[in-house]
Length: 273
Length: 296
Image 1 (cartoon, rainbow over the protein chains, first blue to last red):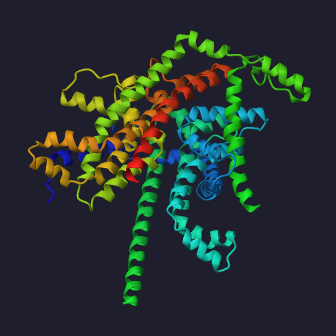
Image 2 (image 1 turned 180 degrees about the vertical axis):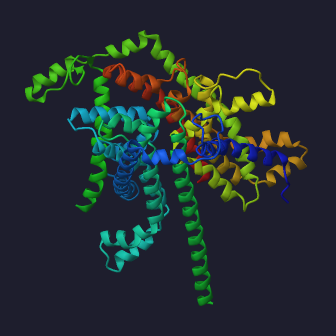
Image 3 (image 1 turned 120 degrees about the vertical axis):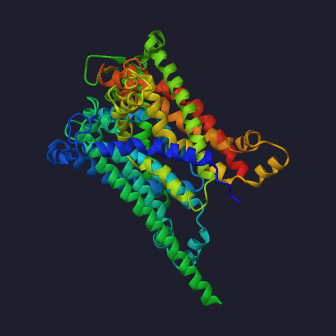
């Protein structure tokens, strides 16, 4: 018997109000007609219009999207390989160093990661721009991908792979035809995680980019430093909207898959009986 | 052969883009600042063979580290980073625990939704979440407007651009890191233990302190480290919400590099920051390992 508790309801209400109110306020004020960000001057979408006419913001958004797509795709490939190495390859010389290099970037302060990569790029004489940001983002997000994928690989039933090998698959075929489809959800969430990390990163991008490639967070940061601006509110609202739609769609898809899997299983049980 | 290729690709990538850059930082932290490009000396000149390497090694020293200990700005920045991280971790715990508790005691059909609501901010831009507080905390911001119209205060409070705003920012952005591990331990807890405690004469509050709190300690410790470790090196929050008197080492490193252009000192600051972080990271891993052993 579950008792209704005022304490729990209050703490949940206050807690979620704290988590969501700032963002709700941000969204509301993005429709404020007044230039003064703290005074309500009526409903208007003028800041969205101004944002969409602002070349600098559009350029930055385009740079950010290209960097995020490239780095998250590279990071997914490298991170999945790294997960396979961590979970499947057993012992090999330098394994401790390898797992150290996978986990260290997760706890490394961003300022240090950024600084060290910048010093590397200068050291080898690589011009800073989109390429260097992609390299930097790939490096730290591949570690996140490999953590996500390796936790899925660790619970994976190897008998399935062995069956494929017995039936005449090569190791590469077995991986592509059996393992990859099963770990695909983890690989996809790894990609999404890498994509968001890249989209969101200010510090590492600031260190590793050059004047030719300003990303959206860098642009936001430099205008926010001067104070609140209604244009940034509009931009934030657009980004929050994308994330909300994406997360809800992803959770609905997961739910749907679970329902379908359950139906299949019931059908199979009925067929057996 | 294929096995070698699978290992080599991510391995070499990480050596080239993680290990080597780190060694470069270590090396530059031992170098001297110079008016040149790159702005430090000595540089390794392999074309001179062994003599080049010898000159290079002879040019390295711990001068920058000595400098860091002599200038009080740096050790005050380290101390104040640790202090700010510690205080905000405790506030986050006080705010996060009741939320995690409420979630774990909510009806089971509600829990996935509540969980999603906690995770959702993770996917939202960190920068935007910090930014959203500027409009609330500024002197003519919403918080002051509300408090003044209710009559709690007569003059606006100064919160933005002080360390208090940094606390708010850290608590707000890192709250999910605290809630999730605590929720995970509380959700697994067997509630009949509480009934047993109450049958044996415990009041509800006693039952909480004697049963629930000790059982959730693993999650509390994990959550505290997950907030404390990244908060020490935080840069975005102190630079957007903090004031000129808010000293945090991430900000000092950034300014040393971008404003003062002193690469050797910036590198030395980074090395010391890492040394400070090693202690909580090792403790955190021990805690995780203990939790795994208890589960297994």
